[in-house]
Image 1 (cartoon, rainbow, N blue to C red):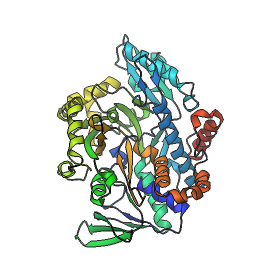
Image 2: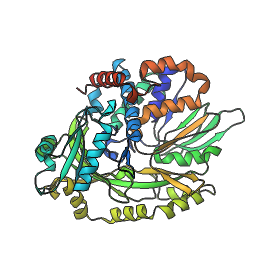
Image 3: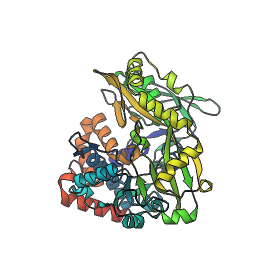
Image 4: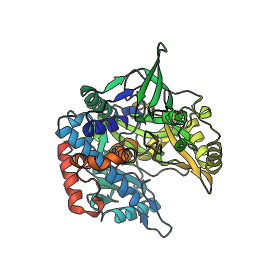
Length: 475
């Protein structure tokens, strides 16, 4: 998110000075690291949690459409950066990988068929295929069938034009573009305080993580893109807009294999349905990953609970985030989400055999010795005030900005990095309203569909998807 915002600003206002603070010794080591996330180019092509089944059996598809349109905006910006020579070979950060939804059991097969019927008429989902024929599904994803009972009803949808994204590599490429063009990147520098001065500037206090040497920087605008650490810094800023927000941390793990024989037989991101009580971000999936040109398979995520807000954070992150303004919302969420807490505890206590059992629901012949367990990144879900319930847990991202636009931060997780470009464009409009109209021509050059709905214009949707696929070497 931070690298994306910086790249947009550098294009719009090349005369502005940009300084980036990174606590760790390298960039993109937390949530953007490729092994800390699933790398899915989230476009709702396979994720069944985007869109809900209604009481009358119909489907709400607007969520899926919105997520897809947001990803198309990101693709357009990345294409522009590649076309202008500002990003390297796109294969270094994005690769074509089919997106598949896979279910079993009569009720789930019926569910997937009806979801497909609801989506297939939309221009963004016109290439989606459906099948309940085991032979066809085997041709799409060979590892899903061997060892499965022939009597078990199964179904799948597939979109060949799905993607796998190495968000760590993309982040580093964007930061390289920034530093090559005058931005200053300071590593191992932890921001410890944010205070608004009388002259309107922000006083940014920081210290070196090794020697503890303090430093002070002043800025007219501050973006807090610290992942799970954003809540603490926004609280320290003292802006009234951050009051009432809390965070619910969720940890995760994946099973990973680099076995060439298995990797060669599976080229897809295969998503299933979430367990009862599971958060949307815990939908099980068996994924092709491409990191540094090397293919791997990952399965998960196995969710759990940790009070840390970052993978490299403190065990006291959660208790230290408590404020008088967010205690009631956090207690209300704890009361109303007992099933979620119960699910996370059960996942945390699950044995390796139990984890392999979950994998074998997708890949019945999976062997223990082929898979290693890796720890994924921390996700901090947004808790916010609610006039009726006292507080609600929000599974998404939320921009928190001061009324005068001088500081903003991002809270939340999924769909996260896939939607970085549209979220940051929205942030620019919110924080720089007096400049935004003047920026529109440049933004439209970077994102040709800006301000238009692809779902309502089949010709534009086809043009955007075709051109970005070609420029990003996805065809």
